[in-house]
Length: 334
Image (cartoon, rainbow, N blue to C red; front, side, top):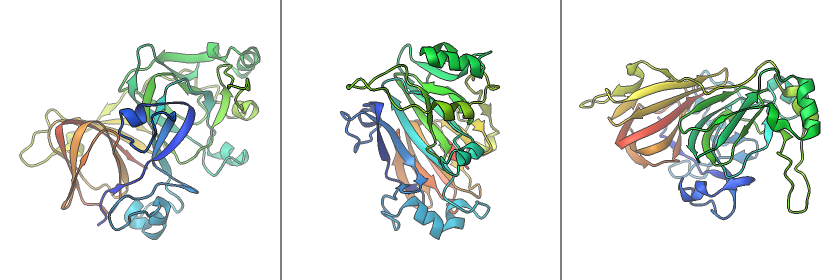
């Protein structure tokens, strides 16, 4: 049996980044004055590697562990190769660029890597008036979008809607999107950094230079049939997937499937009573986004706080979650 693995976050500085990763999400190594936009919690992306903190594998890169202990880490049915998912937190103090990601085939054709990038979001916090831009408005075709690109009015083509904490968005490859200012979110995605910037709100840096765009490649990747994207409607799951421990009651607990894609399934567990997550024969990623909880695996017990993420190997015993007194836990599996 392997224990839950704590990994060292990888902080990514972005021009749109803010202070919340350090100030509110306890990412103590991220300088709150530095504009850190992303905290990569689980990454096996070539030279970009999460490393284990503590235990017998202390300091070991995630990719090395997976290579040396593949069945125990990922499960016997896992495909050969690096871990297929990347999980991160984002803090958008300013609007992100309008962008699109390629699918697997186009990523390879455009030499952007072996994988495309489909992703999903859970909104964590949103300042009043914050927006999400997800999909193109109905009726926007390539010719119309190109005319707005030339005029610098791409915002007129975007489906904009208020950002609300708890909302879930599924963003398949080919979907035009941007995260609005004042939003923090959790993102689960294919393990890829293939991002094509279509528009950057006509911004310029201190030297008056525009940010590099990838318009031709982005236009090739956009799915113009997709249209506007609304928040996903979570599906409540049977109680046995969120089973109460002895002496507890799961009446106030809830387990939901947030989204299911060809690449991952993402769930959310909410509750105040102790509950058990049974082994599923493959790895999972657990991330606490609200409240506190004790995580027990065998004799190991540790306390999770908001922003804490654990890689749960396939060869891990059942997990007992003890909320203190309430928790919201994201649960992903490839």
